[in-house]
Length: 250
Image (cartoon, rainbow, N blue to C red):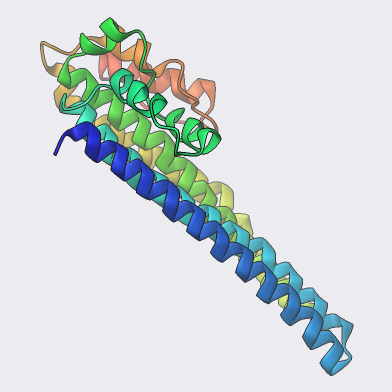
């Protein structure tokens, strides 16, 4: 089967699964909402409405799972791209010919891929340079997924503490919320780990004679690096270029 056909099928399947996940989220929200109001009426305790706060980590869990689906889809396309089996400019043209896929959803997914234009520039990008670009893109979105997971975990802790406090009428359980103080440290570890892994994947490619640093920079400079700061981005790009600049302070 054509690699472009496989890419289109994987994209279509991913969109369908994301839609199914969203429908499951709606069902979950309805269950939590009706359950909270039902418990409040049944036991005549309005404190039971505090369980509505469970909607916060529930939505966070949905976003975490959605990020995982997108990461799986993106990694597969980037693998084919880095091996030269597909070009994104051609893939975009193929998608434009399809009228069955939701345009806004598809466009949002495709923006997470390296820019596919101009055509000549992408075709001239050597495989080793593509490997580096793919590693950087995967690192950026893996870090975003890490943050989503950390935020969901933190919200679950806070919500659990609040619900227990309201229902048990004690402030002692609020001490659980103190666990979220470790969020900045875990976030820092996550960004260091992701960027270090990306750099390790690019070391051999950077030393290859076919690696074109300028072409690499053109491919990643306009990517949406958020929430990675401009300072950390610049330091990482320098490390790719010279191989000796650290990421201290990331």
